[in-house]
Length: 231
Length: 225
Image 1 (tube, each protein chain N blue to C red):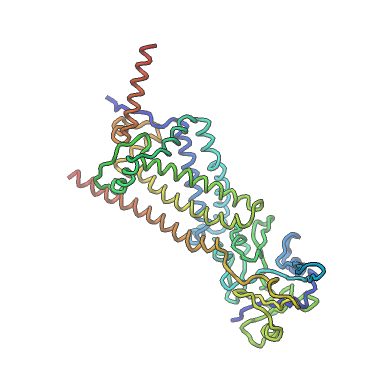
Image 2: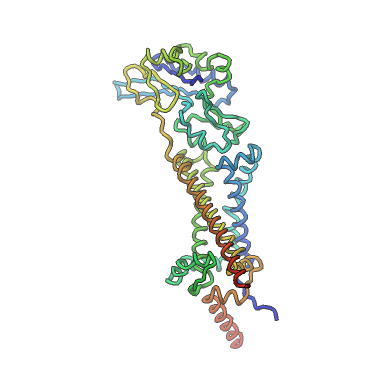
């Protein structure tokens, strides 16, 4: 089984927004909704200032918190590593938006659903490339199978000494002469999600269960007492 | 001869209780489906969208209706209720310590109580604090586009935690009001507003004495006038 990933070579990216626009056209997105975003940054103080661009998108995390919090299971990680949203099943509760550590999800107010980068899974299934990769005039984006050591992606990762954002399927070639602090952080599940899912929900179910158990026990004891009193 | 009855809750108190209770139960049932996947799976996306609308709709009466009914309808008794809930004596602590035996139908001597016993006071305080928590976190979630994302992220676990603790409390509350042989007469106080003098004497002796004294005082004043 393939495990899909993507490399963004920031030494080649010129910040043209081609990926953003191609993606919007491909998925027929609202103007304000962008699955792939281009951020400009500056570091240093004048006159020694350097600048550049970083693109961000859904990182297709190994253990995506957005899928953990989704009440309907609309968001799920497929066997091939692509995190998808079943738009028919999404009820627009937006829990996933709060859970995403990369702010990579967009709410569509017209359809009342949450959307994000799908790695163009339907193109990929037909052997084509995602729209952002296909359109990138600088050739800064490479998509492929991480499991296949011979794939263009795997070879580029080695050759370009790409940095993996740990816990995700995204690799970057860092911008020239700059450290990796401008890249998205390694994956970390947000504390609020961990507390919500791992502590509050099991503890809450236990509290409700204990209360229900106490009520049943009370009913049983009182019924037994009553029949004893009658005797 | 008909049994002597005393008034325990006036109409506004009863309406306030039921507006809060009914909206809370609907919110709990619809809200649980919105977070537990097993429950959500039973209902399906269409049902869940309906539950979500219902959940949002109920936020309005839950937030405003009870407060409006109580403050416009019976501000004086609300003040007394607050005061009593915040006044704790040794008898109250002894009542709480002994109450689990009573809950499970075991023999126990409970200390004398006022209009609200210590359990009812604790339930009131939990309900007030819990409802404020639910209202604040709930409105943060409803108005999520106007508040900081971190606030929304933390409102989710707090909203769930408050709901599930209050859900546990309400199970015990319903059992004591409907199923417990010693306390189930208390439901009459919330339905007709009246309970038997015997119940008032046995369960709220201090309040019953105050009622009697008040009656006596009232009659005496009438005579003087």
